[in-house]
Amino acid sequence: MENMGAKKPKLQELGRVSDRISFLYLEHAVINRQDSAIKVMDSRGTVFVPAALINVLMLGPGVDVTHRAMELMGDCGMAVIWVGEHGVRQYAHGRALNHSSLLLERQAKLVSNSKSRIAVARKMYQMRFPDEDVSHLAMRELRGKEGARVRRVYRDESTRTGVEWNRREYKVDDFNSGTPINKALTAGHQALYGLSYSVVAALGISPGLGFIHTGHDLAFIYDFADLYKAEYSIPIAFDMVAEYGDTDIATHTRQAMRDAFRRDKLVIRMVADLKELLNADDIIPEADTLNLWDDKEGLVKFGVQYKDDSESDGYKE
Image 1 (cartoon, one colour):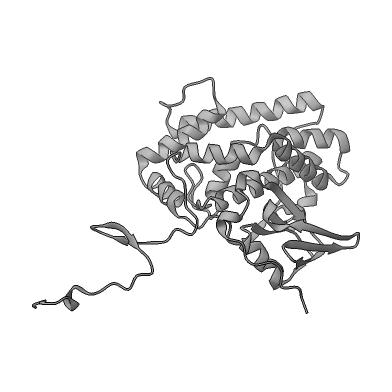
Image 2: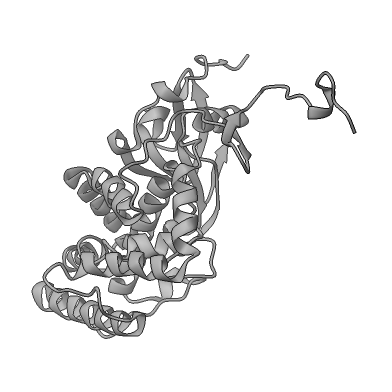
């Protein structure tokens, strides 16, 4: 009989998102559970992964995962995303850590008003131009500045590493048709998207309510990940191509991204950045918070059997 594992932990007992390991990518493996660990078996052997210490598990091609393993991941608040080969495309995801809707409500309020939406967008651009004041610029002007910045980053990285650079191009359905640097960039960006998604979802924020990008179920992920590309995925991609050429470039890039995330404790920074962007320093979500909304009283208790006013004594039609 399959080991039933440890008792489901309470939300307060789980590791905070800022204390967890960034991500783990698996492909061509069988995933089961043993006690409170994810049991991973492939051609090289078996390893056990503490479920409560991983932010996001990226499941690539050839993965078989049991119901019991998925149950453990859900109980521990691990974000799970199903991705294509080399982690290039995201197909699906599972529920993550936070059960509170407070940050989601704040996000929805900010994105639903034009003035507050552009204010958040300007904050995102201000993070990329720390020595300039962009508070007066329109979105069209901000997009132009960002485009020039990214082109400059590519040119500088090409000069620094000696890796030839022409332009960013790739085919979503044919990863291997790209140049080595474009393949490395795709793998690096996808790792950054995965980590960004895990933090966003774990905090109960909507991946789809973007402030700059819009109309896609991952719009806010693209907003958020763009803050870190010039610092992480772009230079790391150029470094990996300079060192390895086209040899297993996706794997080398993912591993380098993982090491950089861990070295710099990027998850902690991401959590702080998200709260700053959403003006959410005042929000401290409580575990398992659930209330009923009332138009006059605000929030009232959930799980109470309320009486109709007509049931009170002396009620008259």
